[in-house]
Image 1 (tube, rainbow, N blue to C red):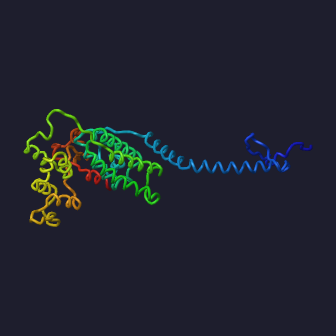
Image 2 (cartoon, helix red, strand yellow):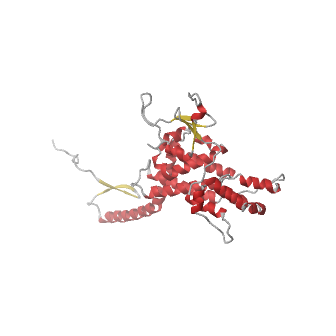
Image 3 (tube, rainbow, N blue to C red):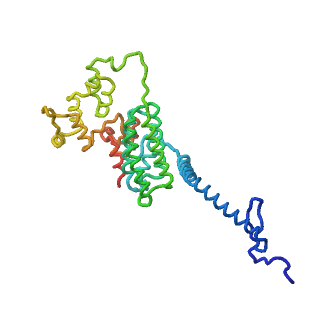
Length: 355
């Protein structure tokens, strides 16, 4: 039986889209149609190239923001555990071990930043993680890290307290992120590279906001700092353990500026943070034969770590191997629990999870 229609094995007709709709393309048609189609195709390609060149950068930016938004919104979990068990090896009762990321996730750092006694401790811990341990965190831990950092920045922008600490933290974090983004493929990154680029852009935006932060002058008709007697102002200065805080307070009034230049004040500050052997290596003497204690403090600060002082810190129980906040405590089974407690500095916190 003869097959009357087109062979079913043929590729079919050739169609092309024009301004008037879809038209069948055939070489049997007039040359005018072919020329019109050619002109249309050239115009279409030119328009597509212009659209692509204009929207390419916008599309890339939108994709980064979309990935970053998805990364932040899928998991924003803040744990509120007051203590965790730190196990470094598998036992018959427990399998696995506790990592730095797990400890960072489970401990209550989200509410700790609202406590003025724990704020500096958490900021210092975030700074140490930014310097060396950021890539060792899991994906969930990294999300919580940047979510907590976002809450810290918003808190500083609202109450105007401790901006210098956050500026130092963001400076170290931006340096680390720049190295990670430039070395994509050379270092281990958890998540999409676009997410890390967006995180770097977010950190740079935070730095700009803190740079533009203006301290509002409070109008108060009551007693002010300038009304206090000199011996009380001097006692306030002697309470500071950070030299930069003394310099900042000295910029408030001419009286505080004069008190902040007291040589005995800076001598006690140097003796509090550094040993005598360190003084001998970096001794600075003026032309009159006096020791420049203020200048020595900032020189020694660059070479040696200062003594850390926090209102409240995490503690580690050597009997139970439990990490906890001091105020909350933990269910200890030792006969004398206080003798088993050991304060944990931010650096010690990181060292606990190095295997």
